[in-house]
Image 1 (cartoon, one colour):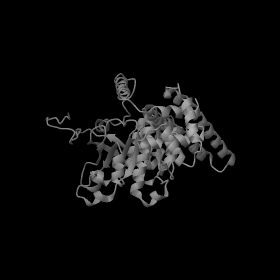
Image 2 (image 1 turned 135 degrees about the vertical axis):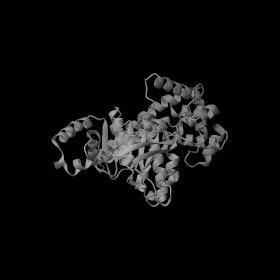
Image 3 (image 1 turned 45 degrees about the vertical axis):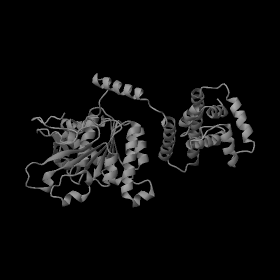
Image 4 (image 1 turned 90 degrees about the vertical axis):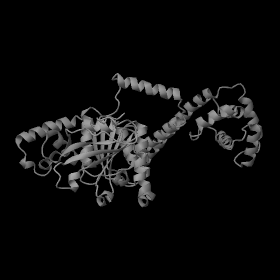
Length: 446
């Protein structure tokens, strides 16, 4: 259907105008004819200003705009006449949109081919650019879809029944029942922050979670900005084979034949895990998106937030704004790919000056931005690190924020020689906050 028919119908019917603007406004160069594209921009501006949009108002607006020819009033009359009898705008928009998408795809392919010919960019850079162009096109297609409450409610109940009857999973388990009891499963489209001071075991904990999930069959992407992939594999070998990590890394001559055989067997098991480990000291948002697409990941780990490279020069001088924008971008990626994003974060030194060393949300660096964008915030805390006289060297897993669940804490035992965590047989501590009351003697929330 021609551009002029769509413009004509929108001039004749204000309801059609509203529908057309909502459908077209985020689609760059929707019209083949540049004159029709300019007319749409005029219509859109009149609509925003709550003015009538018809032949008269359009002719007056076009007369004031030097982009339009002097006979624009005559052309508008012709456009109006051609639209007569075409009452259903939706059909015309859908047909035209199909042509527009094909045009955009052809242009994206031509651009990628031109970059290949020029040979000025690496293959990875061309892939990332091409992927970004396709993502932008997809965003234009879906950005203005208006969901109805009926459709959303139906989708919610369908998912509920599927999960209840075992056809779908409620989320991804951490592999630790005590953590699942408080935090709940990791849900799609969520940004999950795991934060702690140095030496609390952030990397060990995140790697333990990643291995647990990979063993459960989930496609795991582990992005390490600090440790090499070989160091991480050594930790995985130590965890699963229960062999001292220092002996594997530094003193392999001290390993017994039995331990070596066990490591070879464990190495074969690791090789079969659906897990990808990437060590990249120059990690940027664009790379994260590219790695997710290339691995088709179901859950992503990023270790850790503070050493992701800023893509915008202004962010170097404004760290608070950088972390706010960064966590928002990570959340957008999680939503776009419908997966849980698990990100490690350093804490400030604020707790060092307090008598009670347990971390708080305000200890997050750039706490406002990180806390606001995160769906869950989990702290790791080892009281014995600050008080050597304590006998208990367990690690407190503190769920300080949980947008769709409970807050509270549990304990895990850190096994340092294997750099892993294990369950602790202890009484589970139910949360106490404004959302839950614990008036019964057992402390069961209701």
